[in-house]
Structures are given as structure tokens and as C-alpha cells.
Length: 175
Image 1: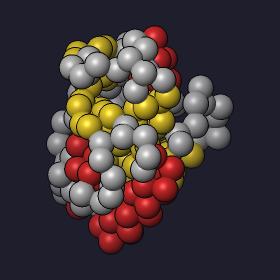
Image 2: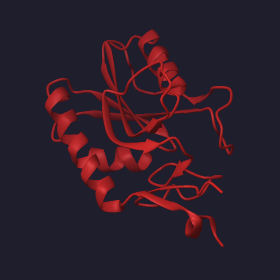
Image 3: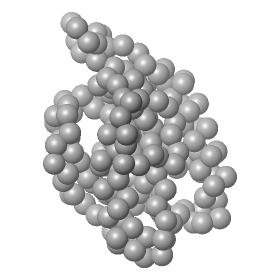
Image 4: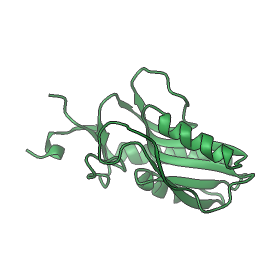
């Protein structure tokens, strides 16, 4: 049996789409007059950032960064900065968009580094906030959905490099 066939649906494609639209409205209300620089965290943040971009009704700039703690693994490891933003950050309001806030270590490191690079403010938006009951070094400013403390995939989140392209969010079955 394939991994997807054994997976449990956590949030349907419709629920994900509705949640992203709600977050886009929240971001628009809060950042509409700041002309923020939206930074997509590669690779997982691509679907979320792409759908957000089409729903944000104000001028903004766009760039990306590539930071990872996971690679092909299913548990976090050492932080690896692969690509820094190419646009100037000094004095800018940033909106960092990623797929999931798990332990929060990666997002906190990204925020701290961007502020050290001169950003005036750094807001964070995540598709999913994992509910594991442990303290996180930061709370995302904008959260579309919550997910249980399980290995989840779909809508940008991968399992062994695959299934980022799913429009819904699934969890691996615990056997």
C-alpha cells in the first residue's frame, strides 16, 4: 500500500484554501500600508506564498530565502542557510512565509538573522502551526491552520522529498 493511501486526511483542500484566504485578509488589514517584502522560505513555503500573493490587495515586493533543518529527513537537524534574500532589507518591513511552525527553531533563526541584517520589522506567516504542547521560541503572527503533533505532509510539506504538491494536508499513520 502506498504512503498516501495509508495517510490520514487532516485538512481538506477546501479547508486549506479557505484558511489561506482568511490569513490573506488578516495580512492585508495589518500590512497594507507598509509595502512589505514578502520572503518565501524555500521549498515548503512555495504553495502557501503563491496562493497568498494572489490574494494580497496591496503593493509588496517578493524574494525568497532557503534555510533548512530537515533536508530529506523527518526530524530536524543542524540549521543550514543555503540562500539569503537578494533584495536590500535595511529599514524594510518583512513578511516571512513558510509551510509549518514545528518547534519554531528555524523560523526564530530566520527572524533573528533578518533583523540582524537591518530589517525594521519581521512578521511571520505559516500555513500550519504544530500543536505539540512545548514552548516555542516564537509565535507566528499569522497562522492558517493547526495540525496535530504528527508528521504531516502536503501543501508544501514533504515526506522524503515527495508530496509537496498535494492541495490538502495529511498525516502519516501511526502504526
